[in-house]
Image (cartoon, helix red, strand yellow):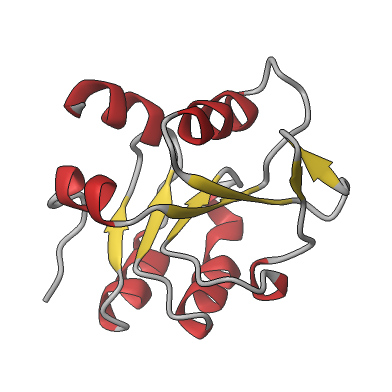
Length: 134
């Protein structure tokens, strides 16, 4: 069975299509900064926030299931108590990784993802991890 926070280096190398759930269009917000960094690092980002039509020059989607392309990593910037429905959507679209950003933890949601054979990273920042490893 997969484990939480394992093989981060491998996940960041292998998977390139990242949905950023809860992205802001405010350049001062961490979700914007992380998405911008990932885009500049060569990842294909898919902003997800029903309040915007585009962020960082990319079409913004109202929800995970509305993205027409295959998503590898579901990078989540939402409160911990809002994670479970996002994980259910990640399972439905057959994502490979559920990534909960710094300060975000939901062990029930993580367990559901693991049971669906989805990798889980919890309470870690994709930007920090990428900068540390590459």
